[in-house]
Picture 1: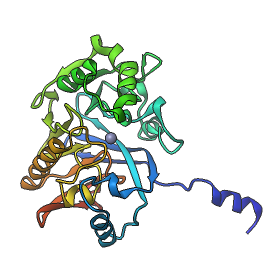
Picture 2 (picture 1 turned 90 degrees about the horizontal axis):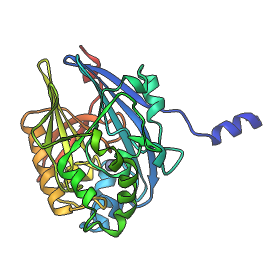
Picture 3 (picture 1 turned 180 degrees about the vertical axis):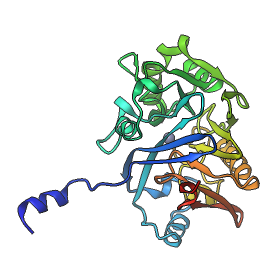
Picture 4 (picture 1 turned 30 degrees about the vertical axis):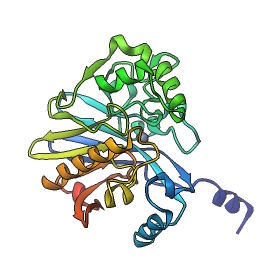
Length: 300
Ligand SMILES: [Zn+2]
């Protein structure tokens, strides 16, 4: 092997970063905004489990332990009326060069920043709000920012925020608070645009929302951060994710939205599910199992 080849081998290998498909009357694009490698599967995905339980589960699913890859997957929905971006990632708050790739994905998907009509925010953690504005200017110049009223008010009050969340509060104050007058605030069950409805998933953050899309004769659920790990969060929804602000409430919400997807047999997209972050939910034991999609969404 020559020197040039050896150098190339050291560099980041390529991987797919967009997945686009037709769904009802919409075009949906999932964008890999980035990933972080960590070495703490336990306790990261289950602070209230013992390490051996998580290690056994990882082995069962052919996953390493304790290493993991945490994905960040933004979603774009092009409806007949509007172009909606859901949780556009870290942006200027990117913690590593392996994150902050949203705009590259947007371009590859065939859109420009000015095309976006709505930026929909599930909650105010950095990986979801960092890219809404840079230096006081909206990243998406023609977009209206839509966010849950409970979530916005919680961070605006800024009371009872944990030590771990102090940087989150600072980012909220820098990125979102100055935009308050131009935002639209929603409640659970409100319709964001025709066919896209907010669903209460409080707990991961004070006012965390997930979303249900109905288009033509099809429906799906965007789980956002209700399922932070594609094995553990499904296998035992009562396990506490280290990033859950109110872990008990997050577990109740997780069960509720997974039950909703299971009963109606709806496909799900998850912000932290490994790219392309889409699949189905089945009941398994006292919990659930995520079945990654293969070609289902490539067919008409
Ligand atoms: Zn997140």
